[in-house]
Length: 110
Length: 114
Image 1: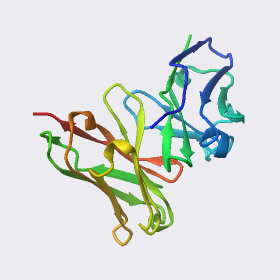
Image 2: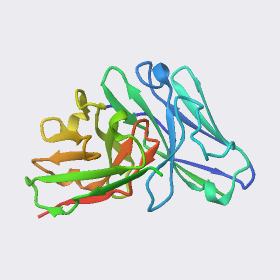
Image 3: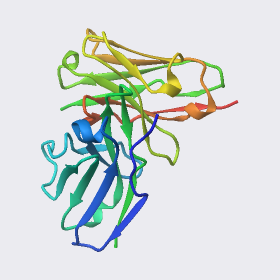
Image 4: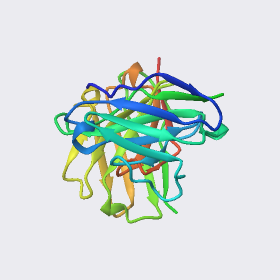
């Protein structure tokens, strides 16, 4: 099953802004938007945003999501050392009747 | 506090079977869709299957269709994954996750090897 496309890696300086992208199609990202998850090494993923820009309680406002057509974006402002992690997008694909994930983006905070 | 605790992961030979369990607490289990998601060593996340609140709808990734079965027991607040005809490529940490992945367990490792 086709997945979503994410850049493998992004590097940004401390306190700068990073924007991660996730490209799908009209059956998944373009339909209901994407969820974004953060995963630190050795830990389970944590949901940051779902259905574009709904944040679960306890998630910092530094994380925000948006969508333009079939591409979803996660913006992280004021980068902190603890933001260094793998970031995954996911979306329900209505034609596959399946959740699809992106391959993940490794964010490095310099 | 929402808690999901997976169990059942072991070393199993190719062609073997295994049943994973996920014990849920801290929320009304019967009102949520639930999923299994796996992560092969050093790789990304892969959704495996999900199940509707009452168990009436189930969906699977193509690679496990006909081999894996997801089920739930709302009276026991538990989610299950029956895995048959296991292959080396099924080796992964298996997580249970709630709804739109808003809560995750710590995962259980399944290793398929001779």
